[in-house]
Length: 158
Image 1 (cartoon, helix red, strand yellow):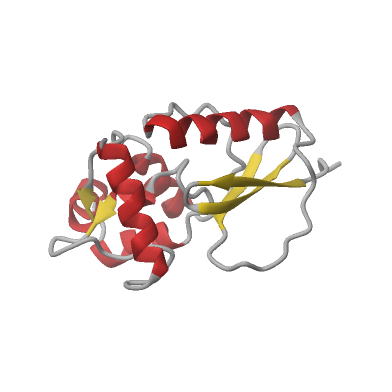
Image 2: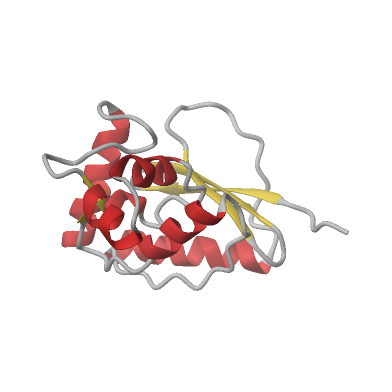
């Protein structure tokens, strides 16, 4: 039997964030780049409320400790990268090549795993940058996604 998955929208300094949760797991955290109308529930579960509270705390000081049970998703390699991302302290960055060397893979593979990350902010792929600049975010290398990544990094530095 599968749990009912609910949608919750949270208004934040970076725009709306869409959360998909069940009673037991967080399924994704999506920063809504567009103004599309999303039919979402009010916070309807204990876990959704925990996620909202932890995200609100993050947006206050940039230093949240995440204690949300994440639904197992992605390939074994992607999960390995996402787990490693969670060890990067707030306010710090690592390069794609740093992660590639630590995990015995290529920078491109790290970038692809970051792009597939379903847990924006909670699994901090925004803390991974290129050797020569900020790198990409949400699969983009310019535009509002890069402005968003820079905002998150600046927020964590302060």
